[in-house]
Image (cartoon, rainbow, N blue to C red; front, side, top):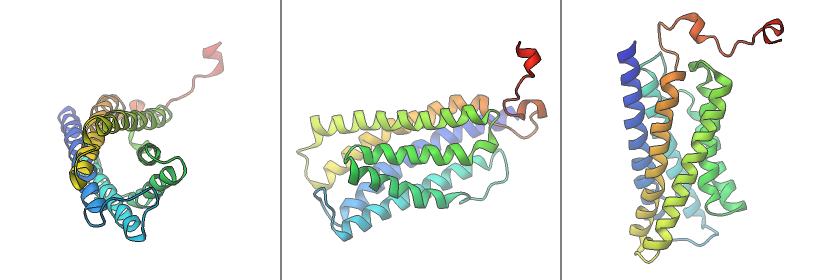
Length: 216
């Protein structure tokens, strides 16, 4: 069981680093900006479509990678639970963009991922209520890290780069610190929270309340 947990945690770290840096850091700007070019605040219809498509690609790889890792500890289909990601994550991104503008698109996108994972992965952890707080908190911190470092680097170093080079550098600087937060914070959380096959039933019962007589 211990070796299975170590393998799970290792795959969780490598998988998240690969997905956030690869699908969000590289594929997102290539798909969103590579075909339709730069844009003002108001996007054209093709630009809106390509941005949304790039987000679909990102969450597809994110869900697939997460589920492949979760298969180590239980039966889980490769694309289980993908529909909330496909529906809510792009629209959370656009809600942030068209209401409060950048960087709230990034913040809302990460929070949507955190909320969905907080709900979907509750059956797999020992303390679900604590897990919900931890999960949303980590994705909030990941968003803040990505925004602070990525947009800071954009203003200091990237804003005068030409076209797609600027977008790639910016999104890699956003996704890389966010990936590190998601990978290693959850490695610590899941090390103690994750229910492994063969765990004692008493270890898996979530947050039992003590009788009032015991508390008094």
